[in-house]
Amino acid sequence: MTRTAPAGTPLGDAFHVYDTTLRDGAQREGISYSVADKLVVARLLDEVGVGFIEGGWPGALPKDTEFFEKARELPLEHAALVAFGATRKAGVRADADPQVRALLDSQAPVVTLVAKSDLRHIERALRTDVTEACAMVRDTVAFLTGEGRRVFLDAEHFFDGYEHDPDCALRVLTAAMEAGADVAVLCDTNGGQLPLRLAETVGEVVARTGFRVGIHCQDDTGCAVANSVAAVQAGASHVQCTANGYGERAGNADLFAVLGNLVTKLGMPVLPTGRLPELSRVSHALAEIANIAPDTHQAYVGSSAFAHKAGLHASAIKVDPLLYNHIDPEVVGNDMRVLVTEMAGRASLELKGRELGVDLAGRPDALSAAVRKVKELESRGWSFEAADASLELLLRREVAELNGPPFTLESYRVILDHRVDGEVVSEATVKVHVAGARVIATAEGNGPVHALDAALRKALAPHLPWLGEVTLSDYKVRILTESPGTDAVTRVLVESTDREREWTTVGVHGNIVEASWLALCDALVHKALRAGERFQPVSMVSP
Image (cartoon, rainbow, N blue to C red; front, side, top):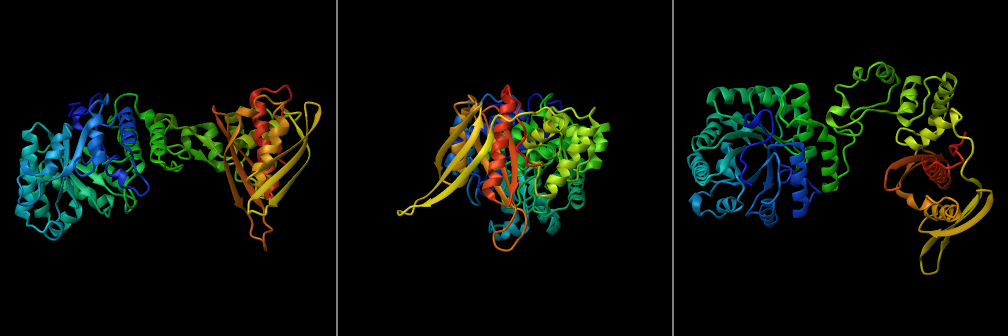
């Protein structure tokens, strides 16, 4: 592709949303993108509508060189691909420097050059002087623009360098811009800046030079997003970010938080029309590719970003959701949730019931009973905050919508067999009544819960045709109280899936096996409810 500017955005080339997930974001500990991963990431970023996608450092990393070869065929709708690299080395002509040549060979229409702008780095790291450092920048920019490339300059360590020797820092910018660079990107490489001082510096640079400037912030002070927004307010018209804030050390400015702020708070149409609701979906998809659990509390796109726990909040939300939400969550593709805990009041539970499809509005007695039940259970260690399926069953029982279980337990037994070869095997036997029959089943497993689950499924499978669709996808255990020895209350969360949806159930007991049993039964009972069994299941939560 040969696009050198954003396409489809209302502001066009007047403002740049520049993503560096595939280069700077990939420096995060634990992230290792394959070439195939990088291609998928690029397509997702383009779906959001970013204007520039920095694909990596061709010539320095074989994987990045291959990416640019394959990315030439990417059908990007909005973004231009960018190759990242360094200026020529000291004492070497730009057209003879193999790293510079690799930037051309990548065929990327845009190149971002990194250059040191702090005198201390120039003298100690590059081991040259300011005159030669500026010549390295000037020669490389001139060579690349002469070859038809659009060039941005990443002025590394700019803010620290400007504070130490502002004239040196500005000389580096001037060398690039006079040679034909389009944007001088001011980089807070060490991430040590705070918003007010950073904004002052950006404003000074714009006033002194008249250059078009950009901003690139690391998050070492926890201010990367605030610093990026402050820079834009001070005159920057090019902002560099990474998806979900990925990057080395504490990370970079989070692309999704920066976009959310620019669009919803500053009213800047920096994305193509209709793309803002894609933020949450793309954020989660990129987390999956990076093999990093999504941050549930991430601004704008986290699953808890619009979750409300306190009863006071819920009372206001019942009147108007925007009373306690800074924006409508749907604007960024998210949604609001009401969490039910011991802090919840009638309004919280009524809203949560509505979310789960249980109408409590016209049933004051049932609502009061449900509030009392939730508070009493949570005082004993139950938590419905992350177990919507168990909560739904509890609420349906309180409104008398459930009046007969799909199966009832007579007894179960679990034994542990430590064999002579060192193998440890659990064996479980369950006795249940289902569809008018008494069924006994035994199964082995690699642990007591696995064995119990296998035995229960073996007993129920002939009578519940949908059972094969349900699998246990996650199992979490938490010890709730500190007691002498091993005498403690255990809470178990079980996440189940049937390939179409996921649901979570909870069990609490002093015995971890019994706590697991309660959660497992609730999981199957909830599936039975969704499967439309002729008998309406009842919650397995102990009264």
